[in-house]
Length: 156
Ligand code: UDP
Ligand code: MG
Image 1 (cartoon, rainbow, N blue to C red):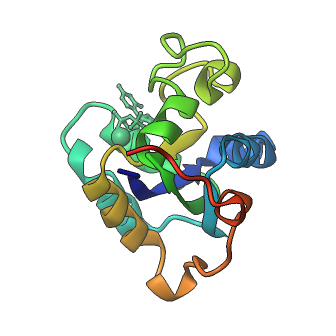
Image 2 (cartoon, rainbow, N blue to C red):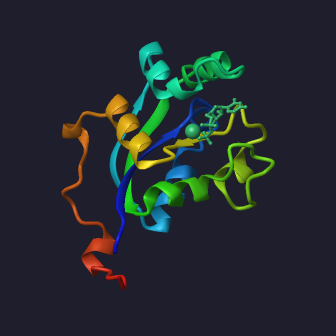
């Protein structure tokens, strides 16, 4: 059965400052995922705390909260078959030195503290994170992308 999912992806402030927005979007587009929402914004302290609530109390938390507010992010919602795990695969491991060559973090990041991209890690995280950054009215899921126009059918 097809597993159609949504995920929250963000180009983090270092990715925006390094002009990697287009490159990062290109990788998800070329994979075949469908972009259904996107905006640039400055993350507020409230958004930062909600987004990274699971990391409160960890040694890196204060720096993470500072980092995510250190410049605008480009927030996106992507949709597709197994998009959550697929985007994590294209992003690579949190630690760039452990990420596979060819992934975004291996190719563009030096250290885990500044790893250029965020992606949700589960369906529950995805829906929680989408709701922090987007109103459902901002999500453009009506149009057909090429995969849908071609009407790809997978075996059950
Ligand atoms: N992070 C960090 N030091 C660590 C672990 C994580 O600075 O030891 C930062 C890094 O930016 C990472 C984010 O906190 O992307 C969230 O951590 P998580 O373990 O959720 O990694 P991710 O899901 O982003 O791969
Ligand atoms: Mg995470």
